[in-house]
Image (cartoon, rainbow, N blue to C red; front, side):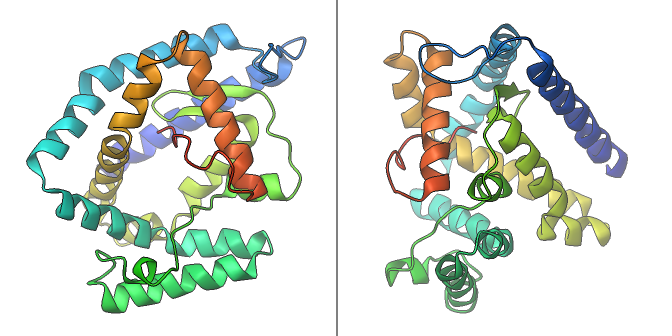
Length: 248
């Protein structure tokens, strides 16, 4: 199991690097009328189509079964627990961004929900007004002034950009929960957590992605636009477009 996991991570890393090099080396900006740089659109559309096939064949049916078979309170508890496990990285990114208020909120949520929310399954802090806010290293790079760079679609991971792919790589390899589990040879627990997180995220987005696909003339273009707008909003912390789908 150890070597399978490491092999998959290496495969995804090499694929991401290949896409980034292709995006950076392509002549011209590839900027379309939507103002989003997409110099390898043909490659991106091919990967997007592959991801969509995988989604329709595996992820979407599993997520629908999860929604049907697991009561909503239990699903909410799982989502709260997964979010609680992200707290160390969220706090770290808030600190790197100089957002002391956000870091304080993240610490408050972690300790309150862990101690009084049954290990994080109950969002006690959220009920008291300390709401959950996602932070990742891609956002941190954006706050530091890094441009998003060309738009890319990663196999399995979906919509991204040069900057956000670099941020994703850092987040994956510095995840303290993953490192703790794998350094203590709890690989099954690490992979189980990752699998549950994917299913939970897909279940959360069942309705919003179905609506986006149904009402889009070009699903690829609509996804790219929604992803880009949401990332810009998260980086600027202006709250606009915050309800746009968080593409899995």
